[in-house]
Amino acid sequence: MGESTPPTDREPAPVEGTDDETARGRRGFIRAGVGTAVAAGIAGAGGTAAAQAYGGWLSDTSNYEATQDHTGESAVTVAVGAGENGQLFAPPAILVDPGTTVTWEWTGEGSGHTVTHEPTADDAEPAFESDQKEAAGETFQYTFEAEGTFRYFCEPHRSVGMKGVVAVGSTDDDLIEPTAGAGGGGGASAGSGLRSGADLAVLAGAVGLGAGLVLAVLSATDRLGDAT
Image (tube, rainbow, N blue to C red; front, side, top):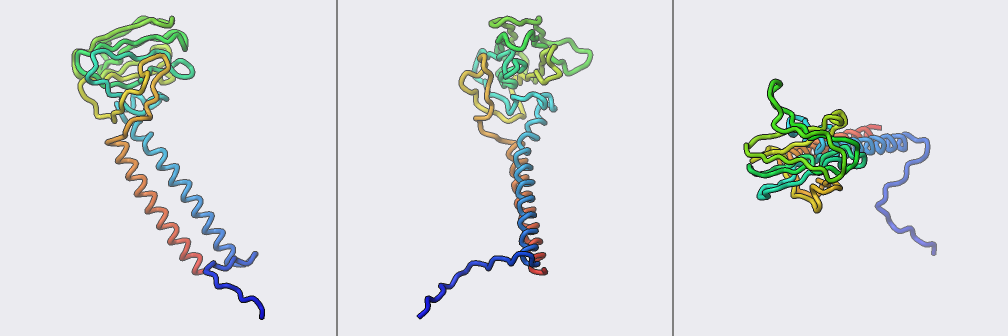
């Protein structure tokens, strides 16, 4: 007796050069493209929400992701000259209580830097402004008594995104816990905290939109395959 062929649920492979093969290839191509587009959209959602914080002040600051929560601390240190090129503040955005003293400490990297407050009104005087310093270990201090949002920058390197924010009392930005060594010479990696608020809302919307788009396109391609 000859051997019987076991039943299989596998869909037969398309014959090369047939319309069936062409339709399947077209559906596979569309599915791959949609998946890539959705993944890219979701990846960029968090960055878009983060760039809107503080009126976009930190949109070109490469090490900014969220605001470090330093409430409950009487003194906080921010590194001046952090990052690979020594042209960043670290952490770039902090939340403190009124009465907190912030000390900016120079790392000695990235040539000379300043810490210069950006007033909200064009005709207002800066609340604080340091001299240009370069040597490692140099410091500049300011005690924030009033609540508010204080944006600042480095005069020589403002154009490359060397900016910072001190939020006093409250902030609408997402908050993360200070990382180990935050405010030291190496800079902060603000990626270890939990996201909330705008980032989560944008991410959830991107996921929902992406899932709906995938289902719609897959349904359309399946119908196209059936028709062919």
